[in-house]
Length: 419
Ligand SMILES: Cc1cc2nc3c(=O)[nH]c(=O)nc-3n(C[C@H](O)[C@H](O)[C@H](O)COP(=O)(O)OP(=O)(O)OC[C@H]3O[C@@H](n4cnc5c(N)ncnc54)[C@H](O)[C@@H]3O)c2cc1C
Image 1: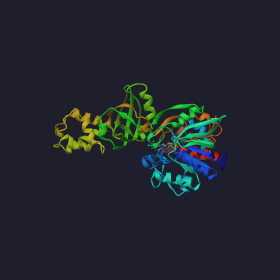
Image 2 (image 1 turned 180 degrees about the vertical axis):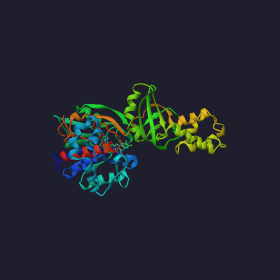
Image 3 (image 1 turned 30 degrees about the vertical axis):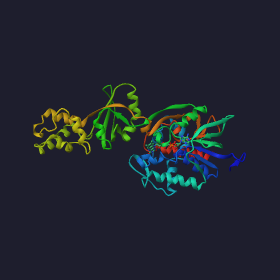
Image 4 (image 1 turned 90 degrees about the horizontal axis):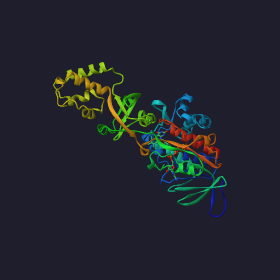
C-alpha cells in the first residue's frame, strides 16, 4: 500500500512509464495485487499504437503449437525468454483476454486475433482492468528525466512535476510509428541509467522501390506471388506469399519478414528483385494460356485484353511495363518474340530495391536493452533494483505475426507480478 513521506509527495508502490501494450498489462497486474499504481502516458490517450496493430484488427499473439519453433522466432533472445514464457505464455494470453470477455480466434499462419477483429476491444479489456484495479492514469504527462540516488530510482521528473515511487516500470516502447508516441525516449533513459542499448534500426519494415508504376498499384494486394531477390545480379533468396503494393514500394507479411535479409543485401551492393505472378505454372504452360487468350481475342487491341492474362488489379500497371510494343496493336499481329517477352514479364517482373523504409513505417525497430542486463524471470534490471523494463524496449528480434504483442503481454505480466 502507498504511504506519504510528506503532505505533497505521495510515494507510489509502482510508477509505470508509458501507457502502451506492455505498460497497461504491467499496471493492470500490479494493480490487481493491491499495489498503488500510477501509469504515465505522454499522449492524450493510452494505447495509441495498440489501437492500430494488425491494421486495426490486432494480431494479439501467435498460436504456433511447437514451443521451440515459437521461441526460435526470438533469435538470440530465445534462451533468455523460456523462463519468462513459463510464467506467462501464449496459453495465458488466451486465458487472460477470453476470461475477460474477449474471445480470440486463430487465423492463417497461426496468427491470433480477437473474434471481433477490433484492436480497440483489446485496449478496452486492459483499460477496464486498470479501472477495476484502481490504477491511477495520468495522460498528457511527459516523463523527462529519471532520478537515481545511491543505485536506486527515487523519482521522475515530468511536465507535471516530480513524482515519487518505490518501483518503476519503463515501458516507453521503441521507435516504430513515432506518431503513436514511441519516440525512443526509453532508449535514452536506459543509457542514462547505465544500461547498454543496441542502437535502434528499423527492422520489420516495408521496402522502397525505384519503379514508378508501383505507385499506381498502391493498396493492391496480390496473393501467392513469388519474389526472388538478387545481389549484384546474383540470386540470393525467394519467398512466396502475399505482396502488398504501396505508394512507395512493397509491404505485407512476406516483405516485412524478409526486411532483415534485404537490409543485409542492401549493405553489400545493388539489390534487385523479380516477381513471379504465377509461381505454380511453368513458363510453357503460361505461354499456352496466353496463346489461348490471344486466339480468342484476335481482333482486339492488346491493351484491352491485358486484364485477361494478369492477376486481378495488376492490369493497369502491367500496360505501363510493356514498353516494347504498341498497346494498340491488334492481338493477331503480335510477334511471337513479343508474346514471349510478355510471358517472361509475368514470370519475372523486375524491380530495383532502393532502401528499407524508416521508423515511421516500421512495425518493429530492432534495438533496445540487452537481455543480458535484465533478470528475465522478473524483468528487473540487473543494474538498478527497483527498475523493470518491458515490451519494445528490450532487444529481442522477431517477425510479424503476433510475436511482438506476445512479448508485451509476457514481459508486462511478469513485471507486474514480480514488483
Ligand atoms: C503499424 C503497426 C502494427 C503492428 N501490428 C502488430 C500486430 O498486429 N501484432 C503484434 O504482435 N505486434 C504489432 N506491432 C508491434 C506492437 O505494436 C508493439 O510491439 C507494441 O505496441 C509495443 O508495446 P510497448 O508497450 O513496448 O510500447 P508502445 O505500445 O510503443 O507504448 C509506449 C508508450 O509510451 C509512451 N511514451 C513514450 N515516451 C514517453 C515519455 N517520455 N513519457 C510518457 N510516456 C511516454 C508512448 O506515447 C506510448 O504510448 C505493430 C506495430 C506497428 C507500428
